[in-house]
Image 1 (cartoon, one colour):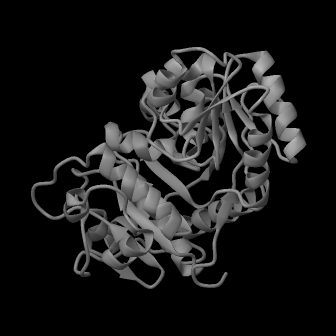
Image 2 (cartoon, rainbow, N blue to C red):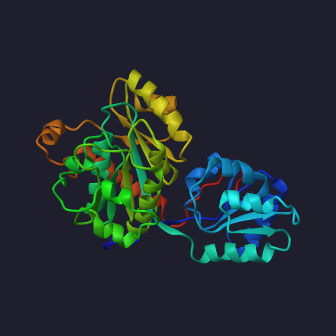
Length: 368
């Protein structure tokens, strides 16, 4: 892969409605435009794909429920209705952040054009992977660092984001604490959108790997608005964004989950590890879509672990001899081609990059 070559996914228009008749009309319009649509029948199902979709079409039946969920602001949101003269429609339009109300059937031609545009161009953005431990000390930060370093070695432009203000500093774990560049404190002070190129220039970097960490000393939680702005810029300025999440989520970390291509849950194969991971998983499921378990060996078999949690397995991360010694010396995690960390990260990158080649398909509630 050449430096900064887009490792991106092409996403489909998102439709949010529970109205089957309206959905049938929108499926017909999409077919006329030569494209397919993703369908969510509830705001919670739409959350992981809200920012990825090139255009979002909200049925008037779901407008109030979506507004109550308070999704992030974005462009190209359309409210669709058959009630042309409903005086309350513009209130709903403003509430969901839509730019326009289209009534059917008169608005069909406009929708055909919107859908056709996405079939030609789509919304191309970098991949975002969140990593979280099922219990304390599972090794999620080490995995996040290793995954980011493995991607950078492939010449994939990568950003590693520390989302845990009490985690001790992921730049220390990476071995980049002395590099010059902005930390969270400087970015939080900025208001509004962040330019992707400016973000790349501002952050500490080594080769194809940049890092966004906290300053030493007092570290305040990141406001949700700041996390949203940073990640929106990051997904346009980098091919891969890896976010190290704390186990106890706050509004900023749920912003990251809402944008995640996939989330890795690191689970120790022991009874308490699985029980703790199940608690974390219940929170993750409320905020993101694709969750995969990374199993650390223990007294339980991998099949028992993933069967208990009910999520697919991303693989087994075997224990790595002398890893603790290297970390205590201040070295970055060893990532040789035959180390457990190296083997797992290379395998996972192969998997997710192959999945994201072409069209990324997520269909809720109705088969294409």
